[in-house]
Length: 308
Length: 286
Ligand SMILES: Nc1ncnc2c1ncn2[C@@H]1O[C@H](COP(=O)(O)OP(=O)(O)OP(=O)(O)O)[C@@H](O)[C@H]1O
Ligand SMILES: [Mg+2]
Image 1 (cartoon, rainbow over the protein chains, first blue to last red):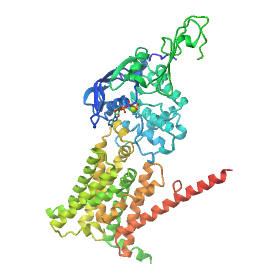
Image 2: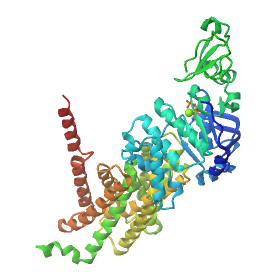
Image 3: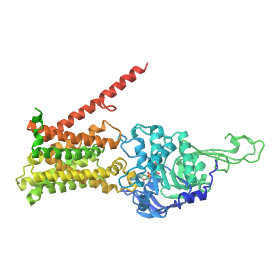
Protein backbone atom coordinates (compact mmCIF):
# COMPACT_ATOMS: atom_id res chain seq x y z
CA UNK A 1 0.00 0.00 0.00
CA UNK A 2 2.71 2.47 -0.89
CA UNK A 3 1.30 5.78 -2.11
CA UNK A 4 2.02 5.73 -5.81
CA UNK A 5 3.29 9.00 -7.24
CA UNK A 6 0.72 10.74 -9.39
CA UNK A 7 1.29 10.19 -13.11
CA UNK A 8 2.49 13.62 -14.04
CA UNK A 9 1.27 13.46 -17.63
CA UNK A 10 -2.28 12.46 -16.76
CA UNK A 11 -2.31 15.19 -14.14
CA UNK A 12 -1.28 17.85 -16.63
CA UNK A 13 -3.93 16.77 -19.09
CA UNK A 14 -6.85 16.71 -16.68
CA UNK A 15 -6.08 19.86 -14.80
CA UNK A 16 -3.43 22.37 -15.56
CA UNK A 17 -2.30 23.40 -12.12
CA UNK A 18 -4.97 22.54 -9.58
CA UNK A 19 -3.33 24.21 -6.63
CA UNK A 20 -4.13 25.69 -3.25
CA UNK A 21 -2.04 28.43 -1.78
CA UNK A 22 -2.83 29.72 1.69
CA UNK A 23 -0.60 32.48 3.01
CA UNK A 24 -0.78 34.09 6.42
CA UNK A 25 -4.42 33.15 6.92
CA UNK A 26 -6.00 34.59 10.06
CA UNK A 27 -9.68 34.05 10.79
CA UNK A 28 -11.52 35.75 13.63
CA UNK A 29 -15.14 34.86 14.28
CA UNK A 30 -17.83 37.42 15.15
CA UNK A 31 -17.44 36.72 18.86
CA UNK A 32 -13.84 37.89 18.66
CA UNK A 33 -12.33 34.40 18.83
CA UNK A 34 -9.37 33.90 16.54
CA UNK A 35 -9.69 30.31 15.34
CA UNK A 36 -6.76 30.35 12.92
CA UNK A 37 -3.73 32.57 13.06
CA UNK A 38 -1.13 33.12 10.38
CA UNK A 39 -1.58 29.73 8.70
CA UNK A 40 0.29 29.01 5.47
CA UNK A 41 0.61 26.01 3.19
CA UNK A 42 0.89 25.24 -0.50
CA UNK A 43 -0.50 22.23 -2.34
CA UNK A 44 0.08 21.00 -5.86
CA UNK A 45 -1.96 19.04 -8.44
CA UNK A 46 -2.26 15.29 -8.09
CA UNK A 47 -2.11 15.39 -4.31
CA UNK A 48 -4.18 14.00 -1.50
CA UNK A 49 -3.46 16.08 1.55
CA UNK A 50 -4.65 15.32 5.07
CA UNK A 51 -5.58 18.15 7.40
CA UNK A 52 -5.02 16.81 10.89
CA UNK A 53 -5.58 18.33 14.32
CA UNK A 54 -7.57 18.11 17.53
CA UNK A 55 -11.22 19.15 17.86
CA UNK A 56 -11.40 22.90 17.61
CA UNK A 57 -7.98 23.22 16.00
CA UNK A 58 -9.49 25.12 13.09
CA UNK A 59 -9.79 22.50 10.36
CA UNK A 60 -13.35 23.36 9.39
CA UNK A 61 -12.46 27.02 9.69
CA UNK A 62 -9.71 26.58 7.10
CA UNK A 63 -12.21 24.92 4.74
CA UNK A 64 -14.72 27.70 5.25
CA UNK A 65 -12.06 30.29 4.57
CA UNK A 66 -11.00 28.50 1.38
CA UNK A 67 -14.65 28.50 0.26
CA UNK A 68 -15.06 32.16 1.16
CA UNK A 69 -17.77 31.43 3.76
CA UNK A 70 -15.84 33.25 6.46
CA UNK A 71 -13.87 36.34 5.58
CA UNK A 72 -10.27 36.21 6.79
CA UNK A 73 -9.00 39.21 8.71
CA UNK A 74 -5.63 38.70 7.10
CA UNK A 75 -3.96 36.49 4.55
CA UNK A 76 -4.30 35.49 0.97
CA UNK A 77 -5.90 32.37 -0.48
CA UNK A 78 -5.51 31.34 -4.11
CA UNK A 79 -7.08 28.37 -5.85
CA UNK A 80 -5.39 27.48 -9.13
CA UNK A 81 -3.79 30.90 -8.87
CA UNK A 82 -7.21 32.60 -8.75
CA UNK A 83 -8.81 34.50 -5.89
CA UNK A 84 -11.54 32.51 -4.12
CA UNK A 85 -14.58 34.20 -5.64
CA UNK A 86 -13.20 33.89 -9.16
CA UNK A 87 -12.29 30.22 -8.61
CA UNK A 88 -15.81 29.47 -7.41
CA UNK A 89 -17.35 31.12 -10.45
CA UNK A 90 -15.24 28.86 -12.65
CA UNK A 91 -16.32 25.68 -10.86
CA UNK A 92 -12.77 24.97 -9.81
CA UNK A 93 -13.62 23.73 -6.35
CA UNK A 94 -16.11 21.33 -4.78
CA UNK A 95 -16.70 21.11 -1.04
CA UNK A 96 -18.36 18.57 1.23
CA UNK A 97 -18.90 20.13 4.66
CA UNK A 98 -18.53 18.27 7.96
CA UNK A 99 -22.27 18.33 8.48
CA UNK A 100 -24.96 19.48 6.14
CA UNK A 101 -27.05 22.30 7.45
CA UNK A 102 -30.18 21.45 5.49
CA UNK A 103 -33.81 20.54 5.98
CA UNK A 104 -33.90 16.76 5.51
CA UNK A 105 -37.62 16.87 4.75
CA UNK A 106 -37.05 19.04 1.70
CA UNK A 107 -38.84 17.42 -1.24
CA UNK A 108 -35.82 16.47 -3.34
CA UNK A 109 -34.68 13.02 -4.38
CA UNK A 110 -31.13 11.75 -4.11
CA UNK A 111 -30.58 12.20 -7.86
CA UNK A 112 -31.89 15.77 -7.68
CA UNK A 113 -29.34 16.57 -5.00
CA UNK A 114 -26.51 15.17 -7.09
CA UNK A 115 -27.81 17.10 -10.11
CA UNK A 116 -27.39 20.29 -8.07
CA UNK A 117 -23.66 19.69 -8.41
CA UNK A 118 -24.06 20.24 -12.15
CA UNK A 119 -25.87 23.58 -11.94
CA UNK A 120 -22.66 25.55 -12.19
CA UNK A 121 -22.05 23.98 -15.62
CA UNK A 122 -25.53 24.64 -17.00
CA UNK A 123 -27.03 27.65 -18.75
CA UNK A 124 -28.98 30.16 -16.71
CA UNK A 125 -32.21 28.18 -16.98
CA UNK A 126 -30.40 25.18 -15.43
CA UNK A 127 -31.59 22.77 -18.09
CA UNK A 128 -29.86 19.43 -17.65
CA UNK A 129 -28.29 18.06 -20.83
CA UNK A 130 -27.76 14.41 -21.58
CA UNK A 131 -24.15 14.81 -20.46
CA UNK A 132 -25.31 16.18 -17.11
CA UNK A 133 -27.57 13.17 -16.56
CA UNK A 134 -24.72 10.88 -17.51
CA UNK A 135 -22.38 12.52 -15.02
CA UNK A 136 -24.98 12.23 -12.27
CA UNK A 137 -25.35 8.52 -13.05
CA UNK A 138 -21.58 8.11 -12.94
CA UNK A 139 -21.22 9.94 -9.64
CA UNK A 140 -23.97 7.88 -8.01
CA UNK A 141 -22.39 4.73 -9.34
CA UNK A 142 -18.98 5.65 -7.96
CA UNK A 143 -20.25 6.09 -4.42
CA UNK A 144 -22.50 3.04 -4.71
CA UNK A 145 -25.76 4.92 -4.29
CA UNK A 146 -27.40 4.13 -7.64
CA UNK A 147 -29.98 1.90 -6.00
CA UNK A 148 -31.13 4.73 -3.77
CA UNK A 149 -31.37 7.42 -6.40
CA UNK A 150 -35.14 7.77 -6.19
CA UNK A 151 -35.28 8.06 -2.40
CA UNK A 152 -36.20 11.33 -0.78
CA UNK A 153 -32.99 12.71 0.72
CA UNK A 154 -34.14 12.39 4.34
CA UNK A 155 -34.91 8.69 3.90
CA UNK A 156 -31.23 7.71 4.05
CA UNK A 157 -28.89 6.71 6.85
CA UNK A 158 -26.16 9.08 8.01
CA UNK A 159 -23.42 7.34 6.05
CA UNK A 160 -25.58 7.16 2.93
CA UNK A 161 -26.29 10.87 3.15
CA UNK A 162 -22.53 11.50 3.31
CA UNK A 163 -22.05 9.44 0.16
CA UNK A 164 -24.73 11.40 -1.67
CA UNK A 165 -23.00 14.68 -0.91
CA UNK A 166 -19.71 13.15 -1.98
CA UNK A 167 -21.41 12.17 -5.24
CA UNK A 168 -22.60 15.74 -5.64
CA UNK A 169 -19.06 17.02 -5.29
CA UNK A 170 -17.89 14.47 -7.90
CA UNK A 171 -20.63 15.57 -10.28
CA UNK A 172 -19.45 19.12 -9.78
CA UNK A 173 -16.11 18.14 -11.37
CA UNK A 174 -14.01 20.61 -9.43
CA UNK A 175 -10.29 20.18 -9.88
CA UNK A 176 -9.96 20.87 -6.19
CA UNK A 177 -12.07 18.83 -3.78
CA UNK A 178 -12.38 19.71 -0.11
CA UNK A 179 -13.72 17.00 2.19
CA UNK A 180 -14.34 17.85 5.84
CA UNK A 181 -14.24 14.57 7.77
CA UNK A 182 -15.64 12.33 5.04
CA UNK A 183 -15.01 9.17 7.06
CA UNK A 184 -16.85 9.89 10.29
CA UNK A 185 -19.87 7.66 10.61
CA UNK A 186 -18.92 5.72 7.49
CA UNK A 187 -18.30 1.97 7.59
CA UNK A 188 -14.94 0.42 6.68
CA UNK A 189 -16.17 -0.86 3.32
CA UNK A 190 -17.36 2.56 2.27
CA UNK A 191 -14.21 4.16 3.62
CA UNK A 192 -12.11 1.83 1.49
CA UNK A 193 -14.28 2.59 -1.52
CA UNK A 194 -13.96 6.33 -0.95
CA UNK A 195 -10.19 6.05 -0.60
CA UNK A 196 -10.01 4.08 -3.87
CA UNK A 197 -12.06 6.84 -5.47
CA UNK A 198 -9.74 9.52 -4.13
CA UNK A 199 -6.75 7.66 -5.56
CA UNK A 200 -8.42 7.58 -8.98
CA UNK A 201 -9.03 11.30 -8.77
CA UNK A 202 -5.44 11.91 -7.77
CA UNK A 203 -4.27 9.94 -10.78
CA UNK A 204 -6.23 12.30 -13.00
CA UNK A 205 -4.57 15.31 -11.43
CA UNK A 206 -7.15 16.43 -8.89
CA UNK A 207 -6.12 18.05 -5.67
CA UNK A 208 -7.87 16.89 -2.51
CA UNK A 209 -7.71 18.35 0.96
CA UNK A 210 -9.25 16.06 3.55
CA UNK A 211 -9.64 16.55 7.26
CA UNK A 212 -9.76 13.38 9.30
CA UNK A 213 -9.30 11.91 12.74
CA UNK A 214 -8.40 8.48 11.34
CA UNK A 215 -4.67 8.87 11.86
CA UNK A 216 -4.12 5.24 10.90
CA UNK A 217 -5.28 5.64 7.33
CA UNK A 218 -3.43 8.89 6.65
CA UNK A 219 -0.10 7.29 5.60
CA UNK A 220 -2.10 4.84 3.48
CA UNK A 221 -3.47 7.33 1.01
CA UNK A 222 -2.26 10.84 1.74
CA UNK A 223 0.96 12.08 0.22
CA UNK A 224 0.91 15.41 2.03
CA UNK A 225 -0.08 16.32 5.58
CA UNK A 226 -0.92 19.65 7.15
CA UNK A 227 -0.83 19.52 10.95
CA UNK A 228 -2.86 22.26 12.50
CA UNK A 229 -3.58 23.61 15.92
CA UNK A 230 -4.89 27.14 15.47
CA UNK A 231 -1.96 27.64 13.16
CA UNK A 232 -0.05 25.35 10.82
CA UNK A 233 2.42 23.37 12.93
CA UNK A 234 3.95 21.45 10.07
CA UNK A 235 3.14 20.88 6.42
CA UNK A 236 4.76 18.74 3.78
CA UNK A 237 5.19 15.17 2.53
CA UNK A 238 3.65 12.54 4.80
CA UNK A 239 6.98 10.81 5.47
CA UNK A 240 8.54 14.01 6.81
CA UNK A 241 5.61 15.55 8.63
CA UNK A 242 3.58 12.66 9.93
CA UNK A 243 6.02 11.69 12.67
CA UNK A 244 5.48 10.81 16.25
CA UNK A 245 7.18 13.99 17.45
CA UNK A 246 5.01 16.21 15.25
CA UNK A 247 1.84 14.37 16.13
CA UNK A 248 2.51 14.72 19.81
CA UNK A 249 3.05 18.41 19.25
CA UNK A 250 -0.25 18.69 17.38
CA UNK A 251 -2.29 16.63 19.78
CA UNK A 252 -0.58 17.28 23.11
CA UNK A 253 -2.07 15.14 25.81
CA UNK A 254 -5.20 14.42 23.83
CA UNK A 255 -3.74 11.53 21.91
CA UNK A 256 -4.18 8.05 23.30
CA UNK A 257 -0.67 6.75 23.43
CA UNK A 258 0.54 3.20 23.91
CA UNK A 259 4.25 2.56 23.84
CA UNK A 260 5.31 -1.05 23.98
CA UNK A 261 9.05 -1.48 24.49
CA UNK A 262 11.02 -4.00 22.42
CA UNK A 263 11.83 -6.14 25.43
CA UNK A 264 8.27 -6.12 26.66
CA UNK A 265 7.11 -7.27 23.26
CA UNK A 266 9.44 -10.10 22.47
CA UNK A 267 12.60 -11.64 23.80
CA UNK A 268 15.17 -11.09 21.07
CA UNK A 269 17.48 -8.41 19.88
CA UNK A 270 14.76 -6.77 17.81
CA UNK A 271 14.83 -3.48 19.65
CA UNK A 272 11.99 -1.82 17.79
CA UNK A 273 9.22 -0.40 19.87
CA UNK A 274 5.57 -0.58 19.01
CA UNK A 275 3.87 2.77 19.34
CA UNK A 276 0.12 3.13 18.98
CA UNK A 277 -1.17 6.66 18.57
CA UNK A 278 -4.88 7.14 18.37
CA UNK A 279 -7.23 10.05 18.15
CA UNK A 280 -10.21 8.07 16.98
CA UNK A 281 -11.26 4.53 16.15
CA UNK A 282 -8.35 3.93 13.76
CA UNK A 283 -5.02 4.09 15.57
CA UNK A 284 -1.69 4.95 14.04
CA UNK A 285 0.76 2.15 14.69
CA UNK A 286 4.45 2.89 14.73
CA UNK A 287 6.72 -0.09 14.90
CA UNK A 288 10.37 0.67 15.54
CA UNK A 289 11.50 3.81 13.77
CA UNK A 290 9.27 3.12 10.82
CA UNK A 291 6.16 5.14 10.40
CA UNK A 292 3.97 2.24 9.33
CA UNK A 293 3.35 -1.30 10.42
CA UNK A 294 4.54 -2.41 7.02
CA UNK A 295 8.06 -1.20 7.78
CA UNK A 296 10.75 -3.78 7.01
CA UNK A 297 11.90 -5.82 9.98
CA UNK A 298 15.63 -6.08 10.61
CA UNK A 299 17.20 -9.29 9.38
CA UNK A 300 16.81 -11.52 12.37
CA UNK A 301 15.92 -15.19 12.23
CA UNK A 302 14.21 -15.00 15.61
CA UNK A 303 12.10 -12.03 14.73
CA UNK A 304 8.41 -12.77 15.18
CA UNK A 305 6.39 -13.04 12.00
CA UNK A 306 4.36 -9.98 11.27
CA UNK A 307 0.79 -10.61 10.51
CA UNK A 308 -0.35 -8.19 7.84
CA UNK B 1 -80.01 25.86 -16.00
CA UNK B 2 -76.77 25.65 -17.97
CA UNK B 3 -77.20 29.14 -19.29
CA UNK B 4 -77.55 30.31 -15.70
CA UNK B 5 -74.22 28.70 -14.81
CA UNK B 6 -72.62 30.55 -17.70
CA UNK B 7 -73.95 33.91 -16.60
CA UNK B 8 -70.74 35.02 -14.83
CA UNK B 9 -68.82 34.61 -18.08
CA UNK B 10 -71.11 37.02 -19.86
CA UNK B 11 -70.18 39.90 -17.60
CA UNK B 12 -66.89 41.42 -18.57
CA UNK B 13 -66.02 42.38 -14.99
CA UNK B 14 -66.68 38.82 -13.81
CA UNK B 15 -64.57 37.24 -16.53
CA UNK B 16 -61.76 39.60 -15.69
CA UNK B 17 -62.11 38.90 -11.99
CA UNK B 18 -61.87 35.16 -12.56
CA UNK B 19 -58.80 35.33 -14.76
CA UNK B 20 -56.99 37.79 -12.53
CA UNK B 21 -57.81 35.73 -9.44
CA UNK B 22 -56.44 32.65 -11.15
CA UNK B 23 -53.24 34.48 -12.03
CA UNK B 24 -52.79 35.85 -8.51
CA UNK B 25 -53.69 32.50 -6.98
CA UNK B 26 -51.18 30.73 -9.22
CA UNK B 27 -48.29 33.02 -8.43
CA UNK B 28 -49.03 33.03 -4.69
CA UNK B 29 -49.07 29.23 -4.84
CA UNK B 30 -45.69 29.29 -6.57
CA UNK B 31 -44.29 31.34 -3.70
CA UNK B 32 -45.99 29.11 -1.16
CA UNK B 33 -43.88 26.18 -2.36
CA UNK B 34 -40.80 27.96 -1.02
CA UNK B 35 -42.27 29.68 2.02
CA UNK B 36 -43.78 26.58 3.52
CA UNK B 37 -40.49 24.71 3.23
CA UNK B 38 -38.41 27.30 4.95
CA UNK B 39 -40.76 27.57 7.90
CA UNK B 40 -41.54 31.04 6.64
CA UNK B 41 -45.24 30.44 6.32
CA UNK B 42 -45.96 33.38 8.55
CA UNK B 43 -43.87 35.62 6.35
CA UNK B 44 -46.86 36.17 4.05
CA UNK B 45 -49.00 37.24 6.96
CA UNK B 46 -46.20 39.38 8.31
CA UNK B 47 -45.77 41.14 4.97
CA UNK B 48 -49.50 41.71 4.63
CA UNK B 49 -49.51 43.50 7.98
CA UNK B 50 -46.25 45.30 7.37
CA UNK B 51 -47.79 46.89 4.34
CA UNK B 52 -50.20 49.00 6.40
CA UNK B 53 -47.76 51.88 7.10
CA UNK B 54 -46.87 52.00 3.42
CA UNK B 55 -50.50 52.22 2.45
CA UNK B 56 -51.22 54.90 5.01
CA UNK B 57 -48.13 56.81 3.88
CA UNK B 58 -49.15 56.55 0.24
CA UNK B 59 -52.57 58.01 1.00
CA UNK B 60 -51.07 60.86 2.98
CA UNK B 61 -48.62 61.73 0.23
CA UNK B 62 -51.08 61.04 -2.56
CA UNK B 63 -49.23 58.11 -4.17
CA UNK B 64 -50.99 55.07 -5.54
CA UNK B 65 -51.84 52.57 -2.86
CA UNK B 66 -49.74 49.78 -4.42
CA UNK B 67 -46.53 51.81 -4.50
CA UNK B 68 -46.61 52.43 -0.77
CA UNK B 69 -47.49 48.83 -0.07
CA UNK B 70 -44.71 47.55 -2.25
CA UNK B 71 -42.05 49.70 -0.63
CA UNK B 72 -43.06 48.86 2.89
CA UNK B 73 -43.09 45.20 1.88
CA UNK B 74 -39.51 45.43 0.68
CA UNK B 75 -38.58 47.39 3.78
CA UNK B 76 -40.07 44.64 5.93
CA UNK B 77 -38.32 41.81 4.15
CA UNK B 78 -34.92 43.50 4.10
CA UNK B 79 -35.36 44.37 7.78
CA UNK B 80 -36.10 40.71 8.52
CA UNK B 81 -33.09 39.47 6.54
CA UNK B 82 -30.88 42.07 8.22
CA UNK B 83 -31.99 41.29 11.77
CA UNK B 84 -31.69 37.55 11.05
CA UNK B 85 -28.15 37.91 9.74
CA UNK B 86 -26.91 40.09 12.55
CA UNK B 87 -28.45 38.37 15.53
CA UNK B 88 -28.91 34.86 16.80
CA UNK B 89 -32.68 35.23 16.96
CA UNK B 90 -34.75 32.54 15.37
CA UNK B 91 -36.65 33.29 12.20
CA UNK B 92 -40.11 33.29 13.79
CA UNK B 93 -39.06 35.78 16.43
CA UNK B 94 -37.54 38.06 13.81
CA UNK B 95 -40.65 37.89 11.63
CA UNK B 96 -42.92 38.62 14.58
CA UNK B 97 -40.75 41.48 15.74
CA UNK B 98 -40.54 43.23 12.40
CA UNK B 99 -44.15 42.86 11.37
CA UNK B 100 -45.73 43.94 14.64
CA UNK B 101 -43.47 47.01 14.70
CA UNK B 102 -44.49 47.99 11.20
CA UNK B 103 -48.16 47.24 11.84
CA UNK B 104 -48.07 49.42 14.95
CA UNK B 105 -46.38 52.17 12.98
CA UNK B 106 -49.15 51.93 10.39
CA UNK B 107 -51.89 52.22 12.99
CA UNK B 108 -50.09 55.15 14.57
CA UNK B 109 -49.84 56.93 11.22
CA UNK B 110 -53.49 56.30 10.50
CA UNK B 111 -54.54 57.74 13.85
CA UNK B 112 -52.30 60.83 13.67
CA UNK B 113 -53.26 61.69 10.08
CA UNK B 114 -56.77 60.40 9.69
CA UNK B 115 -57.27 59.39 6.07
CA UNK B 116 -60.16 58.33 3.97
CA UNK B 117 -58.70 54.83 3.83
CA UNK B 118 -60.10 52.66 6.54
CA UNK B 119 -57.97 49.75 7.59
CA UNK B 120 -61.06 47.74 6.70
CA UNK B 121 -60.50 48.12 2.95
CA UNK B 122 -56.99 46.78 3.28
CA UNK B 123 -58.00 43.90 5.46
CA UNK B 124 -60.93 42.73 3.34
CA UNK B 125 -60.01 43.00 -0.33
CA UNK B 126 -62.56 42.16 -2.97
CA UNK B 127 -61.64 41.52 -6.57
CA UNK B 128 -65.25 42.06 -7.64
CA UNK B 129 -65.23 45.58 -6.28
CA UNK B 130 -61.85 46.92 -7.32
CA UNK B 131 -61.59 49.50 -10.11
CA UNK B 132 -60.37 48.62 -13.57
CA UNK B 133 -56.94 50.20 -13.43
CA UNK B 134 -56.20 48.32 -10.21
CA UNK B 135 -57.14 45.08 -11.93
CA UNK B 136 -54.58 45.82 -14.60
CA UNK B 137 -51.99 46.67 -11.96
CA UNK B 138 -52.63 43.39 -10.15
CA UNK B 139 -52.47 41.40 -13.37
CA UNK B 140 -49.17 42.97 -14.40
CA UNK B 141 -47.56 42.34 -11.01
CA UNK B 142 -48.68 38.73 -11.00
CA UNK B 143 -47.65 38.05 -14.59
CA UNK B 144 -44.16 39.53 -14.16
CA UNK B 145 -43.62 37.62 -10.91
CA UNK B 146 -44.74 34.40 -12.51
CA UNK B 147 -42.33 34.91 -15.39
CA UNK B 148 -39.37 35.65 -13.10
CA UNK B 149 -40.17 32.66 -10.88
CA UNK B 150 -40.40 30.32 -13.86
CA UNK B 151 -36.94 31.40 -14.98
CA UNK B 152 -35.26 31.30 -11.59
CA UNK B 153 -37.04 28.51 -9.73
CA UNK B 154 -34.09 26.15 -9.70
CA UNK B 155 -31.64 28.75 -8.41
CA UNK B 156 -34.10 29.64 -5.67
CA UNK B 157 -34.54 25.96 -4.85
CA UNK B 158 -30.79 25.41 -4.36
CA UNK B 159 -30.53 28.59 -2.32
CA UNK B 160 -33.31 27.51 0.01
CA UNK B 161 -32.24 23.87 0.16
CA UNK B 162 -28.53 24.29 0.76
CA UNK B 163 -27.25 27.83 0.85
CA UNK B 164 -23.58 26.95 1.17
CA UNK B 165 -23.76 24.68 -1.86
CA UNK B 166 -25.55 27.42 -3.76
CA UNK B 167 -22.57 29.63 -3.07
CA UNK B 168 -20.05 27.00 -4.15
CA UNK B 169 -21.72 26.81 -7.56
CA UNK B 170 -21.35 30.55 -7.85
CA UNK B 171 -24.90 31.71 -7.14
CA UNK B 172 -25.35 35.08 -5.53
CA UNK B 173 -27.57 33.87 -2.71
CA UNK B 174 -28.05 37.31 -1.16
CA UNK B 175 -29.36 38.74 -4.42
CA UNK B 176 -31.60 35.71 -4.98
CA UNK B 177 -33.16 36.09 -1.54
CA UNK B 178 -33.83 39.76 -2.09
CA UNK B 179 -35.34 38.90 -5.47
CA UNK B 180 -37.59 36.38 -3.78
CA UNK B 181 -38.77 38.76 -1.09
CA UNK B 182 -39.35 41.49 -3.64
CA UNK B 183 -41.59 39.15 -5.60
CA UNK B 184 -43.27 38.10 -2.39
CA UNK B 185 -43.95 41.72 -1.44
CA UNK B 186 -45.31 42.49 -4.87
CA UNK B 187 -47.56 39.46 -4.88
CA UNK B 188 -48.76 40.12 -1.36
CA UNK B 189 -49.89 43.52 -2.54
CA UNK B 190 -51.65 41.92 -5.48
CA UNK B 191 -53.30 39.27 -3.33
CA UNK B 192 -54.29 41.89 -0.79
CA UNK B 193 -56.58 43.49 -3.33
CA UNK B 194 -58.10 40.18 -4.34
CA UNK B 195 -58.61 38.37 -1.05
CA UNK B 196 -57.68 40.86 1.67
CA UNK B 197 -54.86 40.86 4.18
CA UNK B 198 -56.32 38.23 6.47
CA UNK B 199 -56.48 35.62 3.75
CA UNK B 200 -53.23 36.36 1.95
CA UNK B 201 -51.58 34.00 4.39
CA UNK B 202 -53.79 31.17 3.16
CA UNK B 203 -52.93 31.91 -0.46
CA UNK B 204 -49.20 31.68 0.25
CA UNK B 205 -49.36 28.59 2.46
CA UNK B 206 -52.20 26.22 1.66
CA UNK B 207 -51.45 25.24 -1.96
CA UNK B 208 -47.80 24.52 -1.17
CA UNK B 209 -48.73 22.56 1.94
CA UNK B 210 -51.18 20.47 -0.05
CA UNK B 211 -48.66 19.75 -2.80
CA UNK B 212 -46.04 18.85 -0.19
CA UNK B 213 -48.19 15.91 0.84
CA UNK B 214 -48.40 14.70 -2.74
CA UNK B 215 -44.82 14.58 -4.06
CA UNK B 216 -41.14 14.25 -3.19
CA UNK B 217 -39.88 16.27 -6.14
CA UNK B 218 -39.68 20.00 -5.94
CA UNK B 219 -40.46 20.60 -9.61
CA UNK B 220 -43.68 18.62 -9.36
CA UNK B 221 -44.50 20.28 -6.07
CA UNK B 222 -44.46 23.64 -7.83
CA UNK B 223 -46.61 22.41 -10.71
CA UNK B 224 -49.20 20.88 -8.38
CA UNK B 225 -49.18 23.90 -6.12
CA UNK B 226 -49.66 26.37 -8.98
CA UNK B 227 -52.41 24.25 -10.51
CA UNK B 228 -54.24 24.12 -7.21
CA UNK B 229 -53.80 27.81 -6.49
CA UNK B 230 -54.92 28.94 -9.93
CA UNK B 231 -57.90 26.59 -10.22
CA UNK B 232 -59.26 27.28 -6.74
CA UNK B 233 -58.92 31.01 -7.27
CA UNK B 234 -60.70 30.83 -10.60
CA UNK B 235 -63.46 28.67 -9.19
CA UNK B 236 -63.66 30.80 -6.06
CA UNK B 237 -64.27 33.98 -8.00
CA UNK B 238 -66.86 32.16 -10.10
CA UNK B 239 -68.74 30.74 -7.13
CA UNK B 240 -68.67 34.01 -5.25
CA UNK B 241 -70.85 35.48 -8.03
CA UNK B 242 -73.68 33.14 -7.03
CA UNK B 243 -73.12 33.46 -3.32
CA UNK B 244 -72.76 37.20 -3.57
CA UNK B 245 -70.04 36.77 -0.96
CA UNK B 246 -66.42 37.77 -0.46
CA UNK B 247 -64.20 36.13 -3.07
CA UNK B 248 -61.38 35.53 -0.60
CA UNK B 249 -63.49 33.46 1.72
CA UNK B 250 -64.64 31.18 -1.07
CA UNK B 251 -61.13 30.74 -2.52
CA UNK B 252 -59.59 29.87 0.80
CA UNK B 253 -62.41 27.49 1.69
CA UNK B 254 -61.83 25.62 -1.56
CA UNK B 255 -58.10 25.45 -0.89
CA UNK B 256 -58.69 24.14 2.60
CA UNK B 257 -61.01 21.42 1.29
CA UNK B 258 -58.32 20.29 -1.13
CA UNK B 259 -55.75 20.30 1.63
CA UNK B 260 -57.97 18.09 3.79
CA UNK B 261 -58.47 15.71 0.89
CA UNK B 262 -54.70 15.42 0.44
CA UNK B 263 -54.19 15.06 4.16
CA UNK B 264 -56.38 11.98 4.24
CA UNK B 265 -56.04 10.48 0.77
CA UNK B 266 -52.50 11.30 -0.41
CA UNK B 267 -50.85 8.14 -1.80
CA UNK B 268 -47.66 8.29 0.26
CA UNK B 269 -48.10 10.80 3.07
CA UNK B 270 -51.86 10.63 3.55
CA UNK B 271 -53.33 9.40 6.85
CA UNK B 272 -55.24 6.57 5.23
CA UNK B 273 -52.26 5.30 3.23
CA UNK B 274 -49.97 5.28 6.24
CA UNK B 275 -52.64 3.64 8.40
CA UNK B 276 -53.03 0.96 5.73
CA UNK B 277 -49.27 0.42 5.54
CA UNK B 278 -49.10 -0.01 9.30
CA UNK B 279 -51.88 -2.58 9.32
CA UNK B 280 -50.25 -4.41 6.42
CA UNK B 281 -46.97 -4.49 8.35
CA UNK B 282 -48.71 -5.69 11.48
CA UNK B 283 -50.41 -8.49 9.55
CA UNK B 284 -47.22 -9.49 7.76
CA UNK B 285 -45.42 -9.81 11.08
CA UNK B 286 -46.09 -13.15 12.77
N1 LIG C 1 -19.29 30.26 14.16
C1 LIG C 1 -18.35 30.31 15.13
N2 LIG C 1 -18.29 31.34 15.97
C2 LIG C 1 -17.33 31.40 16.92
N3 LIG C 1 -16.37 30.48 17.10
C3 LIG C 1 -16.38 29.42 16.28
C4 LIG C 1 -17.36 29.28 15.26
N4 LIG C 1 -17.13 28.12 14.59
C5 LIG C 1 -16.05 27.58 15.19
N5 LIG C 1 -15.60 28.34 16.21
C6 LIG C 1 -14.44 28.08 17.06
O1 LIG C 1 -13.30 28.03 16.24
C7 LIG C 1 -12.45 26.98 16.62
C8 LIG C 1 -12.15 26.10 15.43
O2 LIG C 1 -13.33 25.44 15.02
P1 LIG C 1 -13.37 24.42 13.82
O3 LIG C 1 -14.78 24.09 13.56
O4 LIG C 1 -12.57 24.97 12.71
O5 LIG C 1 -12.62 23.16 14.45
P2 LIG C 1 -12.27 21.76 13.79
O6 LIG C 1 -10.80 21.66 13.73
O7 LIG C 1 -13.01 21.58 12.53
O8 LIG C 1 -12.81 20.75 14.90
P3 LIG C 1 -13.50 19.30 14.75
O9 LIG C 1 -12.42 18.30 14.72
O10 LIG C 1 -14.29 19.18 15.99
O11 LIG C 1 -14.36 19.32 13.54
C9 LIG C 1 -13.14 26.26 17.76
O12 LIG C 1 -12.53 26.62 18.96
C10 LIG C 1 -14.56 26.74 17.72
O13 LIG C 1 -15.06 26.85 19.02
MG1 LIG D 1 -14.49 20.41 11.88
